[in-house]
Length: 165
Image 1 (tube, rainbow, N blue to C red):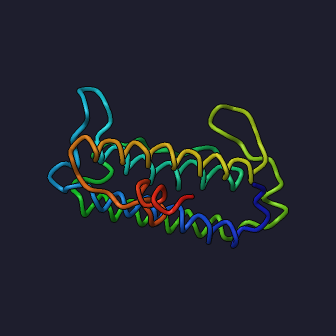
Image 2 (cartoon, rainbow, N blue to C red; image 1 turned 30 degrees about the vertical axis):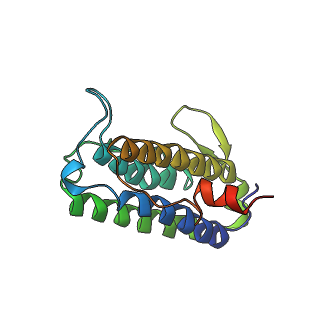
Image 3 (spheres, helix red, strand yellow; image 1 turned 90 degrees about the vertical axis):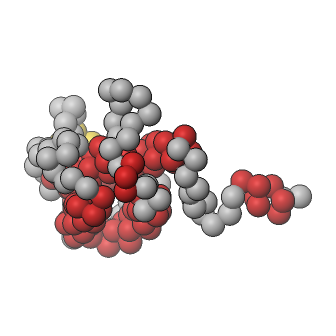
């Protein structure tokens, strides 16, 4: 997948993030800081991480700037409503940056925290993969708590199997 337009990517990214947000809304507020075992990230850690990395790492890097990633601790946002608001605000800020990227900027190389540079469109593609990784963690952790979750694209695996030949 090659990303050729900032507005096109921003529209696509809005859909990706909306699917993640649907899963975030399944987190029981009382379980926001639950982790599957000691020393592992909580639901809140993951949501804060997704918000901060989107805006303050990817959003900065695609502008040619170094990462300002703030981490994922509770000092950034504490409590379900505050975490969700932080997540939404950071997404809106980042998506404005992504939508403004020109075709030339998408082809330009941008810095990454590892010290290498890559095409901006490839760095944005990596952001999508990163999102999918953490969305999968949220699904798994919710499953561990017995919380029902929405199917990713509208059908459950059983429904897909039933409709298959």
